[in-house]
Image (cartoon, rainbow, N blue to C red):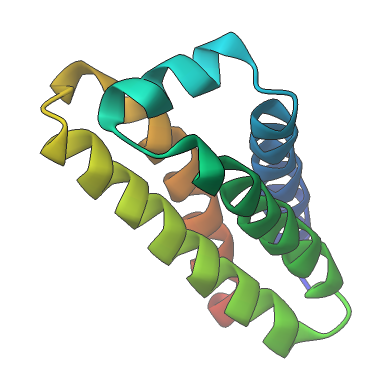
Length: 115
């Protein structure tokens, strides 16, 4: 396992974990845009669980690679859906925010295959 893969994966998992925590505590900078995009508040806990599970899965994947690959694929799909949601809401200036999470997860996935 390469050092770069290890560092990117741990940082990406921590970043996604922070995102999950932010939705769990209903941080203003998270829930206001979700409301603006039309995401029902009843979905928010499930979105947080999905992010948290993905972050944990990426870390577990350092020991059990198939779990990490599945978690990273799930997070890539999750954040791709977030980009689509932002675009459908026509909040084009907000598109970089889900990409900030998508890119490190995707890089970790690619590095995992290369390792």
